Image (cartoon, rainbow, N blue to C red; front, side, top):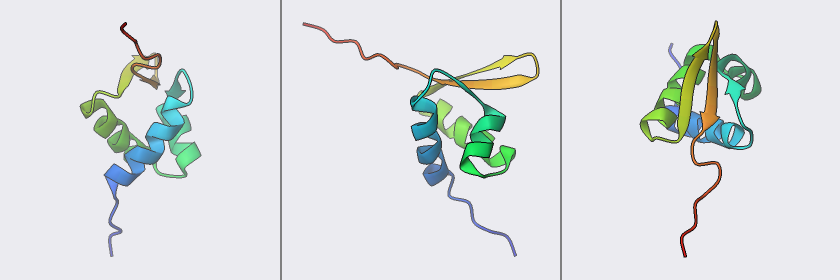
Length: 75
């Protein structure tokens, strides 16, 4: 029997972790959420599609960082 995975819910939990810092590796995110790295990658993809995070590869590490950490105010 397969377990249903709610990627939207997982991505919301991931967003709270990612947005609290400057950057985090994909493997560290998976560890902190206690999920498989493949599920963390799906959640990161969801957040990237929502234009909330940057994803970059540094050597063998995939690093995630929040976009718009510092809001811009006009006026």
